Length: 232
Image (cartoon, rainbow, N blue to C red; front, side, top):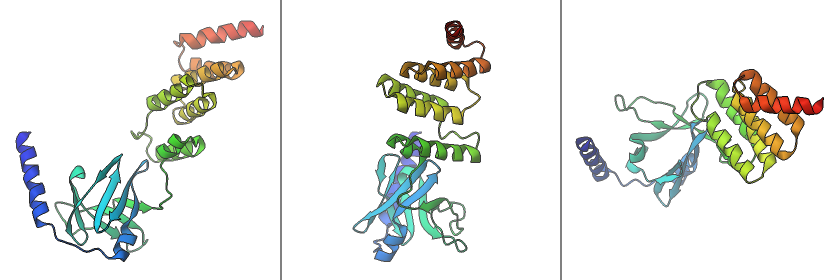
């Protein structure tokens, strides 16, 4: 492990030592500044301060080493990158330079509009409809995606419940139902939110669904029985 770190450190020093002093044109900076889709719920933002490019990614700011006019080494990503434009579509990309064949062209991270928002961004902003739409689109493309999970959304919903933000909690739990309709737990949580908000009828219907999916759900069973007796 120490030897690997040492070799990587030497590599960084070599790259820094070999880096050219490149003056980027305003046209190049205009064409390459902006957001690039790392995945459907994650973007890399490229911007320039004076003549130095920077990348914002996952809450951090990275300062790539400029190796050549259109070649950058990003230590945090362990990759060399360049900007490319697709010859047929005209779309721009931030792309990895393959180590085994650096002359080959890849189209990795598509450039998107500056006002592009990921589903997670919409979720943080409280735009639950847009967040749900985006997450469903991700799942439609990859049903086994690990970009989001039921537990994280459930935790967010309960944070809203603790703050008595019932409408927000219900919206998040309903999104979880849309994304994970075969899970009894999502219906159980939605039922709980409706119950705390004072809507016993909707709580009942969701506890019924939770119990249908899992007859071992004692809480759902107890509520269904109590509600049925009351209605009689």
